[in-house]
Length: 329
Ligand SMILES: Cc1ncc(COP(=O)(O)O)c(C=O)c1O
Image (cartoon, rainbow, N blue to C red; front, side):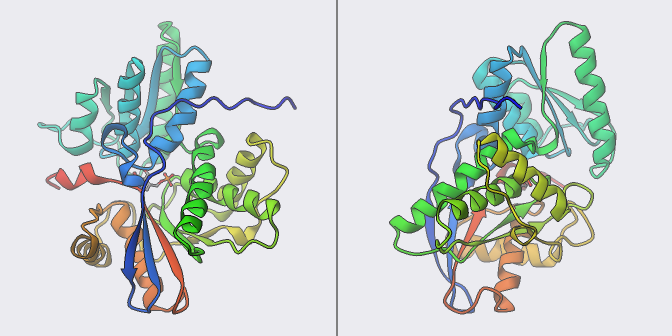
């Protein structure tokens, strides 16, 4: 099979800072990787994926972008921001009904000039939302608008390349700051961030089998998206192929902890509210209830169970999510 060429455009401000987050209750040290500060359209993890996804769109001569997500999708808002930067009309397929007044991510998406398609579907009807995206994409093709259609969360192998490179960025920053990371913890939903990090891990291990590399721990926040170790491993391996690497991820590389999700996506948990307060008071880190606070509640929960050991260095990737703080529900 011919090697697919990766096309990257600059959308993010990189590297993002890695901040010393002081001691956790076990005595381990917290580090916060500020991917909420990637810069594109109010920031967040999707900027790293969009550099490759939009690079691919431009390479293919796309004249518009289409993507899909929950009503308050950060991925949709950041795709709208990328569309604005690139001069590409952007269509967003969203769950829920059209609100009387746009808030949070929807308000920003509209400011970036995107067309919002409110489907009336439930937040967790991921299959229905994807079906709507497919139909809309076909309508745009029929109208000659040359859409580049991006699946939920931008979680394809091309998108995940952004997080394989982020893995290297983190390891390099740890080394510059004179420590070795024992674990990298983050929120996982559609799985592209997770798959990219696992690909980065497998590649680093192949380059130096003796290197001390961190455990990658995804805290799951949505049932029915990518909560399967198998699909993350497959996506990581596809990402490695795209990077022209022969190394492979193993089953043990993929750890998804589902214990901090609550009953499902976007359902508020007490642990996440407490984690958001902890982060705001300790480091002025702003975490949202749907994604980053749940991920951080996982980190604090694992630390309380002494899962990292007492003198570990634990990196939390702050994946963003600020705009949904400013919503009324
Ligand atoms: C703020 C935030 N954190 C984490 C994630 C999860 O990333 P992924 O979809 O790559 O698993 C998302 C996805 O939308 C997000 O918006």
